Image (cartoon, rainbow, N blue to C red):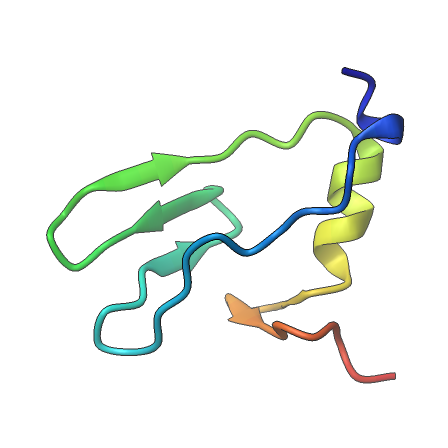
Length: 68
């Protein structure tokens, strides 16, 4: 599927501390309290630009988009 034609992401799992995974956008890794992890690749500039709408250094996530 061409990323430009992909549907918008949907939240299918959500948790807040202490169950929420730690997210590191620098290493593109999510790590859960049990030690399991997921490394998410970004495939191109479109995904990087979309991520910037929600991410603020150092590893702060704005779930509803960054304030303007």
